[in-house]
Structure formats: structure tokens, C-alpha cells
Image (cartoon, rainbow, N blue to C red; front, side, top):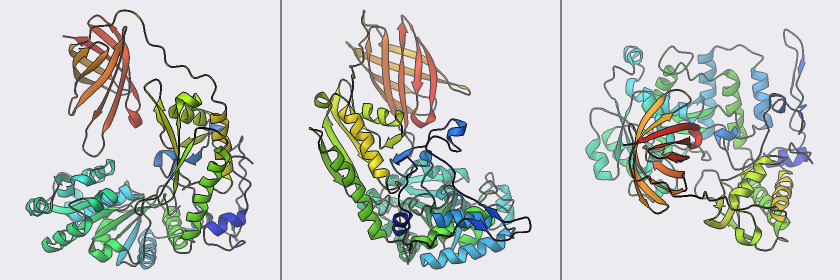
Length: 526
């Protein structure tokens, strides 16, 4: 069986709460031009992605945007295909879609967006400017309400959506601090829903109670969560709730849902395309709008308990395949909260015994055929030989459990030769002191400073960026230096990994910044 699978369509339809045969062929009845038919023609080795040099993935990691989110449901594909055959007046369409989304989720009003991040932007601008056209057109320079309060536990990479509309983020940690920071400049309160928030001293119910006292709108970011009818956050008094369309809903990847109060939703839609306001770039097409509506309709038809049993069964398939390999331990990680709700499997081992580390397994799976991606692995040479990989079945399809199990078995049962990385020889370079560092980005340069302390081969110090600062840790062997830092940018830490050579008072090499890619660096010691 190939990566794309030759599993039973009946199994897939059952997992989506449909009777077998309910899926009609993707065929348009007569259109003004001609009848059209769409069929799936891709194979493992020849498909529209391999034809442009891209290797598709068996996704055992999850609904990450970088991995293209989720597979859209058959009903979503059908809806998008059919929508593409019509012209509609967008205000009329969005009103109709919004009414249906609101009905399905048991709330006052709703709209389709281009993802949950777009929902954050539009909600923020709606609270800053409402539908006052003069204020809207003057954004972001002119605004009366320009502050959005956020609990410190809710800082995350997506709160940039607040700042995009010109909102100033105000961090708070306690209920007393929240009350004290509310002022005439407060446009909105933003909070993410997750287990950390629920255990904090400032959970969502406490925030909503204070917001109600002060008449301040509250946005609850529930992007990866399962929606509910009636919506629990709206029932508790939230003004907005945002969901991603391309995660558990299995709608279009570039879609989302914004639930809320009628006047605020209308103001958010007023800000969005096709209107020539601040959110014009956040264009939600008729195909995406009808696709997310189809996904939401299907959500309330799917047999979610059966899906949970199916996903756990897939992980048991993997465990059973790997049990003959001595030294493996299996741990089932049950979901916490409503986000990414599926049982994951963690496989542990001692790399000294098996001869391969977690990171080496992860790389072999990613480099193999089929290409398999798992959650980021733990275990590296030579200092962290306790290893594990973690598997998430959430976005897999029937039959892929066996492919996944075979792929991991192949690597763990035949680890090959994996030597420790060589340690450079020669006299250890002296690196203690102050260094002026230039980062050569793909586009532009940055000027930073290292203040390093050395104890034999161990190196520590301060990493002074142009805006943010961090602590450095690393080593020097011979003339080779490695340094790492985790720069605490609010909500979105930058991870720096420097490698290079030292020649007296000069050093140079490469740096990697995680999702932000590679760059090069040079340094001069003062």
C-alpha cells in the first residue's frame, strides 16, 4: 500500500459520520460552459507535488500550518468545487454563511475568515474602530482606543494579530492588575484557551467576569480546539471566539471562524475584504467560505467517539509492530483539554542499547520513502542518549498506521552505524571577552554583541541583540565554537544556534534561527 493509501472508502466515511456511498462524485451538472468532472489522479511517485520537486509527507506530527494543516474532508472538497462555479455578491454570501455558522455553534453571530490569525486581526480592529469609517481609514495612525490587555500566560506567536491592527499589548498577571490596567484606552482583552490558562490565577471565567463589570470586549483564542454547541465561551460572556478551519474541523487550510456578538461581528466584517478597509488583505473567497461551512456542518455529524477509538487503535498497531524490538517502552499520552484531541504514542529507548538516537530516527524517517514526519524527537549524541519519538494520529488516514509502523520498524531494527560527532583537536581557542557580531541575513544585516566567559571547553555569556537580549551557552573545541541562546521575545522566543571557527580575534560561521531559517555571522573581539 502506498503513501496515499488504498484503504476502504467505507472506513473513511464512517470516521466522518457518513454512510458509505453518501459521497457523490465531484461532478458539476450542466454549467453555461460545459459539464466538468474532477478525479484524483495522483500516485505515490507521480503527483502534482512531486512534479515540482516536493515530497509529500505521512503526517504523524499534527495540524501544523508548516505541514499544510489537515486533509480537508470530502464534503469540503465537494463544496469548494461547486462554489467555484458561481458568482455571488460577497456581502450577501457572508451574511448567509454567518447565519448558518452561528446556528451550528449556538451563538449570536459569526463570519468566515482566512484563518484564526485573521480573526484576531479583524476582531481587534473592530474593537478599536468599530464601523466608524473615518477611524477605519485612519488606522493605524489615528485611534482612540489602542490598548489590548493580555494575560502573561497567553502571550504567543499569534498575538501579533493584535499588533497588526495597531493595538498595544498590555501584559497582566492577576485579577487586581487586570482591573487596574483597564482604562479609556482599552479596546479589548485577548486570552488563549489552553490547560495552562485553566490552571492559572487568571482563567477565562475570571477575565470574563471583570470584563463584564467594565464593559470591555473579550476575544478567546480557541484556534485548535473542538467547537461546541452551545459555545461555552460565548455562554460565559465572551465577545468573540476564534477557531482555525484547517485543524480539527478539516476545512480549507486558509480558513477560520469568528464567533461573536452581532454588532462586533458586523464591524469585523466591515473591516475585511471585499471592503476597502484595514483588513482588505484578509480575503476569504467564496470557495473557502463554503468549504468551512461544509466542514462545520460535518463536525456536528461526525462520530467523534469512534474517531478517538480509531486513532488510539492506529497507535496500538504501531506498538504491536514494534514490540519484537527489545528495549522499547511505550507510553500513551491522553489529550488535555479540547485542542488537538487525540491519544499520542511515545516510544522510549536507550540509544546506547539500540545504537540510534531519537534525532537520528527522526531524520531517517524524514529522509526515507515514504517520507514520515513525527513530533520533534529527543535524544542526541553524545550527551543525551535517553531517546524518544512521539506520534500523533490526528491527521492520518486509514492504512497509514501500517505504513508508519513499518517505517519505524525498519529504522529501529536496522539502525546502521551512527558514530558520535568528531571532536575537533588542537589547542582550545580563547574566546572570553567582548565580541562585536554581524549577522548577515538573507535580506539585510544585524549588529549584535557577545560577552563570553570561558571555563576550559565550556562557554557561557550574554547575547545582546539589537532589541532583545538572551543568555548564551555552548562549547569550544580546538578552533570550533558552538553557541546557543533562547531570546525571550514576548510570545515568540527566537532560538539561535551559532557554529563557527575562531581565528585569534576573529570568528565566523553559520547560524540557524529555527523557523526563521539560516544566516551567516562574523565577529571581531574587542
